[in-house]
Length: 161
Figure 1 (cartoon, helix red, strand yellow):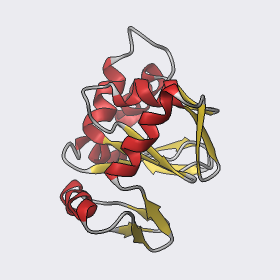
Figure 2: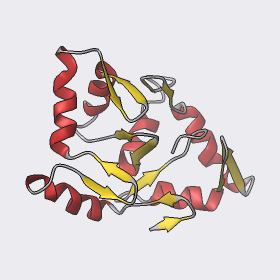
Figure 3: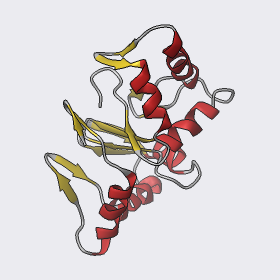
């Protein structure tokens, strides 16, 4: 589903993409190049060999990437070039970390603190829209996003999608 420049992928569709692992190494949707799960595994395997991994223009420290993959053995955050994908169930897990960490940093990317994320969702009954960087979200839409438990949610922070 495309809304403006926002591309949403249903997790069922993503499953079909990951099922292609034995057939092709990568999947391209438009200009978006998706890593195959095997490629993602290879990246995590680099932890003991190199300190950083570059995907597109985003520099990831492999230790940070490991911490991300350690969250319930799921792919919580996958960055491809300028694209940041968050699974909504994993997004919930991030908010559950509020008492443990204030922010989550991957490479040079600073993610919203869970408390700030909570504040954003708390604005639903007060104002109609929320702005994160240059992205304007209607709070009702934001609620729908958090409700998409079985779908992949795309969150924009600043100019980073």
